[in-house]
Amino acid sequence: MKEYTYSVARVRAKEASLLTRQDIDQLLSADSFETALRFARDRGYRSDEGASVDEITAAAERELWEFITEIADAETMRVMRLPVDYHNIKASVKAVFSGIDGEDLLLDHGTVDKNLIYSCVKRREYDDLDKEIAAVCEEAMTLILRTQDGQACDIYVDNAMLAAEEKAARTGGDEFITRYTELLADTANLKTAYRCAKAGRGFSFIENAVYDGGTLNTAELEKAAAAGIDSLAEYVGTTPYSDLAEYMKTSAAAFEMHCDNEIMRFMQTARFDSFTSAPLIAYYYAKKAEIDAVRLILLAKLNRLDDNMIRERVRETYV
Amino acid sequence: MENLGMVLALTGAALASILAGIGSAIGVGKAGQAAAGVVTEDPAKFSKVLIMQLLPGTQGIYGLLIAFITLSQIGILGGSAESLSLAKGLLYLAACLPIAIVGLLSAISQGKAAVAGIMMIAKKPDQMSKGMIFAAMVETYAILALLVSILAIFGIAGLNI
Image (cartoon, rainbow over all chains, first blue to last red; front, side, top):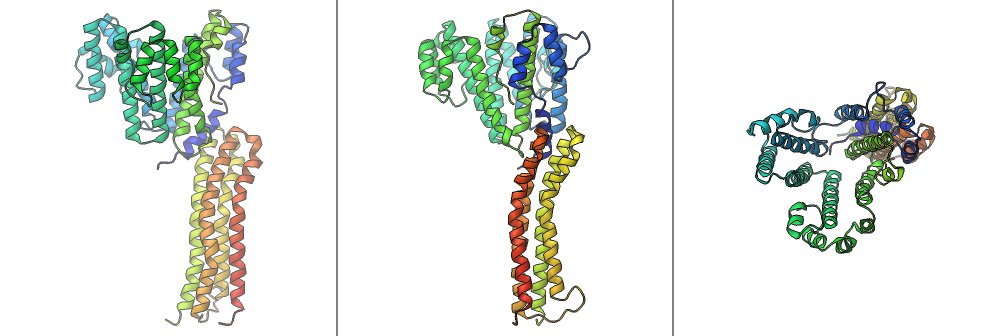
């Protein structure tokens, strides 16, 4: 088995500067955007004077990827890079469909060059892409042209992404990554089922929207979601995710937050590992979540949103 | 084959230095990787992680010590080598085995504990002494094996077989 001792040691040194729950609370309780920004700057979110929140977090993400590229090979991080590819597929398909220039919507650090995806979708020629990505691009484009429905396209691409992640994890054979992709699939299915139940969607819509994978019995989940929130909560109560059932009765934001916390708690198990790639994956996930939280809080402070509304959306931290 | 005793005794000395040396090399190597990782991010921690890296190196020294003592007992060191009985040669070989085998395995284990300790220093530098204690605990068993090897080698010299 490949050992990652050097990389894990670098990650451990970096982890010391991750924001803790107390840091996030302090950021949340800042009385103004300027105070929050100053705090974020002190804690490593460096940026030029007058930079926007987007620029600040984009710089942090760039720095994260630079670090990850130094410590882990592309294959190790494949599962973490796949979402970027599938985001780029969605953005390209929708931009081409709407006839707008989509290049600004694309993200870096996928497994495939973002411009290659965009140009292939634009030309409707997918031969330069690898077989799986090409098939998804083609199908997504056909779907959006046929149905004129962006949501149907999103559902298709998201489910294709979950399938690609599970496949990549199985091929890699790493237990931690496999469990992570299972959790991703399960929480994605729970969120989908919850949203569908809340919106009163019919069985056939739910059946199409729920990803056919993960560890949950999707047929049962779909049936329960079609019958409404109460029956969904009852079904979830019988699964390993029974803790989440009670949050279904609070708010959508709270439920989704607890779904993501479930993944974070799994990531936290990598804190005691010194030799495998798990801490690298976990650090990437944790730092990405931290950047998202900082972005959310700064934007909320900038727009003077209610603190409680933000609190409901800020996820658990890694350290 | 009248010198078979000498061959066996020398094999013992060689095993003590080879196996314990391999163990230490693996242990120090693993700890070195972790130490380099920490120093990449924070060069100021060099001296702290260096001490941790050296901990699994002692088994190699113990192996060397046992090899030296054996070589001098059988006269290869000092040039007074005489023929050694087969039984005595086998006894020397057996006496070298504790530090050879325990040295190999304990150094690798100690290396892993040192790696964990180095990572602890990366996050909590003020807890360094605790990290050292955890890694040093493994040393106990290398010292016990060293003791048994030394006592046995000195005991063999006085035997009239």
